Length: 125
Image (cartoon, rainbow, N blue to C red; front, side, top):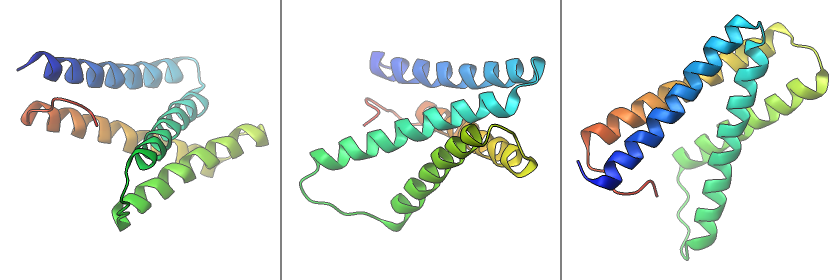
């Protein structure tokens, strides 16, 4: 495994450990919906920002249905957290959405790590 591959795997492991620590801390201090919402919001903003800066660099645009679906999903996650913050109280449906989104992001991180350990990845772009 090359140096760049190890760096990418290390970054993925740090993200996974951060998610696990947020899960444990959230359970211990009874703030799990809020903390998972923050993690979901940060992940959604990072993904949306990455996509925008990537689209600015591309000269010829081919936007697929899968790409639009993921972007819409991430936008929905960001908007749901902003709604969660602005309402001030956590309703049951908001809590369930935050848990589901957190689980989906966590599973995507684990799948990404397995993919990166299986194949040779030299860069994350």
